Length: 506
Ligand code: GAP
Image (cartoon, rainbow, N blue to C red; front, side):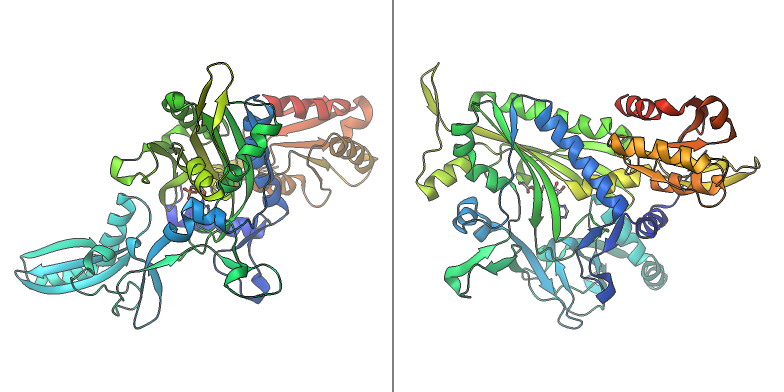
């Protein structure tokens, strides 16, 4: 039976496990870390690589209408002028005049209590995520104060105003940290700037890309002219992006350096609606196929007012993280906006000429854009389970297990000799070598009681454990244990590789 953890506890336990077992570390931890940057340890890098491989296989290798690309991170700065990032990639910011903390204005709320015309209480609350998270944060921040005030005055009216709405001509915003006054909202460009070459002046300014998408648009002509492909077709890219986020938070969820998995799918404008629906549903299903529960995964279509000015439709794939419901991926119909902009700024023709219909047109673009680190975090959250399992003596023990989809699991198979004698280590080593040679991530462990070794693998999410025991020497068989059902079966030592490979394909 799986045991339930409270959302806050669950996140704390998961972060602890990620550090303890080498999934995710704080970047430059030995120097106190750096906010918004993370490192993937030996298990984490395998997990994230599996997420990327699953994406690449289903998007590029198993299809014949999508090709891959790998662009440079630093590009000609004109790209970011054409894309609108130099002017528009801004967050509204407020600073606390007292403690100097900085917040995104659209994430700070003012909670105001009035007794008639008189303001009797004002507090600032920082809340990210959906409406429910916001309401809970506000309720928590105010429950004590509310009780105290309501004892004094019984006709209070409470209101909640987003700070960037409140500061326009209204009372000053209140800092959620120290209660000091906030400045008015100011715009802050989120692109990281650097200089290319020896000179550090305005002519050598360049940016670390804030999305991989623009590298695809900039190469659209090159790919069209070289890859023997025509609309409808897509270009896919996985790579690092950088954003100077004001408030990196929720573990890796909002980082300053992260990886994206993006597709730009080019099609005739008349087919854009059809392809939009196709990609929205296909991308949603991808997460389900890899183990996210449909009860926790939502497709949320954007309201008209929420859409970027160039987008005709957009939907987010959202997941119920322990810290709230939040976006994993966005699927947008970006019309011909990007190609038209690049045509205008570069002077290069971006139109496609269809030989058959003799029509020239700038394709519309459907963009499924997901975050690798966010997907990896969602798979970790979904996988984290505490349940009860019998130990070697049959007594029930709590175990922590990461129930990854076997194809995502960092280690596919662990190999144990039951004891360190009677030829068992040698036989186990042989199976281990065969697994490694076949490209399976395998782990050899001969230390301690076998029950403890199972527990360690459960915590790492290893789906299969193979034990070489006394019977192996007589009939060449070993046991293979399933992480989730805990069932063990005997199979031939010589068939371990084939058995694991078959299970991974299922
Ligand atoms: N080309 C479109 C684009 O970049 P976006 O919604 O800004 O759209 C796409 O980003 C995805 O990239 C998001 O759904 C998220 O998964 C990921 N992402 C964006 N900012 C991120 C951040 N600061 N940290 C981690 N992942 C991020």
